[in-house]
Length: 68
Image (cartoon, rainbow, N blue to C red; front, side):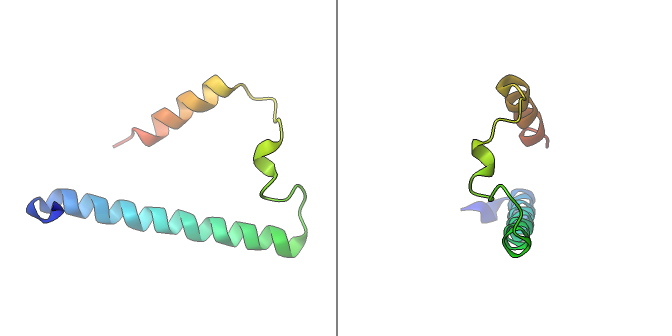
């Protein structure tokens, strides 16, 4: 389906490579935390309140993900 537009196909291929690289870094971080015994555990880190309002975080996420 995507093969009709080579530019689009190349863009999606690069996006998949980038996604894979982020996933590999995440796995390395998780394994590193497990081996070093860092607290809080990675699965509880998102539940912690860091004192940052949600609106700026959401706005920043939109800015970063909408970049082309």
